[in-house]
Amino acid sequence: MAQVIKGTLWRDAVVTKLDVDFADTGFHARWIFQRCQCGDLLVQVEQAAPGSVLNGELLMVDGQVLLARGFEQQSSDLAALMQAPTLMLQLAMALLNRSQPQGPATVIDKQQWDASEARRDFSINTGAAGGTFAAPWGVQGSGWRTAAGLQRFELSFQFTNPTPDNPVTLTAMRFSGSLDYRQQAFPISDSTSLQGWTIQWLSRSETESKATSKNLTLEALRQQTKNLH
Image (cartoon, rainbow, N blue to C red; front, side, top):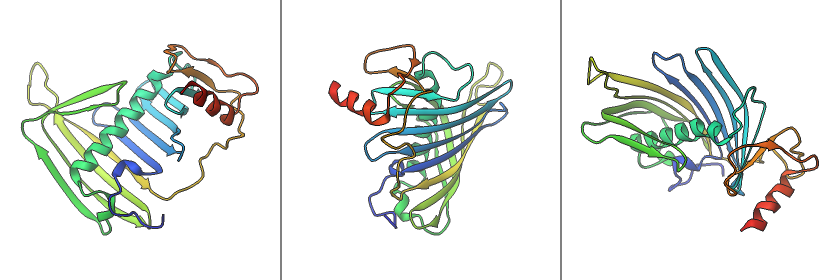
């Protein structure tokens, strides 16, 4: 679609580019989420923290199976690699909802946002991981349209992070990125070979990944997920 239509939700973006910085920790992440109309999700991961760097790609097919490639010294449990991207994506979408509850269609010229809560904690849960950010908390930032169907945003999220010496210590996270609502082809075609990826069936309660079979394609894997329904 050329324009973001009324009623579109922040989370409806086809491609989401998200940068996250944790204040005073040295942690920075850049994730690119690309959604297929069929429901699959591709996540490009770049995470850097003091003493460690994580790079690779994650592919979720039909919510049942998770694949990964490119990660060095990756965990045998791929679900652990998916927790941070999905948790931070949900947090960013929740903060956008709080900042501009009318959704992206109402954002054309640059808007300034400022929302706060004095008593209720801010909680999120992806089903696989969750987090709670203590009140008082606040979010300030801005959003604007850069092209038809394309939005940008910058947010600063401050919340209480009690320490033994100071129960009202504040911590901050910064979010920035873009949301592309235009329909586009999924980066991995049906006929693409998945050789070189590792695979883990979440719907079969697998807790460890293994190498994909030599001739497995994305189309064949999608058919396997359909056979399980």
